[in-house]
Length: 137
Image (cartoon, rainbow, N blue to C red):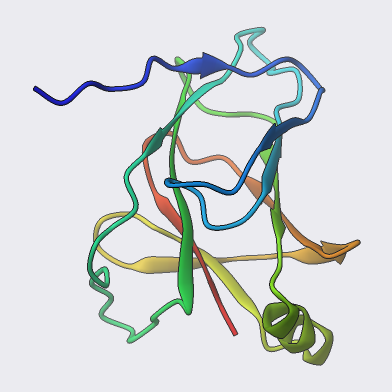
């Protein structure tokens, strides 16, 4: 029997650090702003995919960072902020502007807009469910 982790409720407007480990390939900081409907967002970390995920456009991330499941009744608004620690190589690609950060919806990868802040790539995210997050130089 597979035991699943119970959802962890995120505090409002306070960053939560998730250390690098078995289900996360980089240190990640999550900040969930106060939601328009007043509900709190919860998350669980799922196992990382063991093989490349399908993508009709040919996108293949250099690494999958995490497979996070965000939970909330209704849409996430405003978006959750994810800060993902970059490797040295990824930081070099980011300074050249050729870094990609994307999530996978079980069919294909979708690129996210990003910015860099002190060695972390920062993205805003609002997908309920369990999309893997990947980075590709």
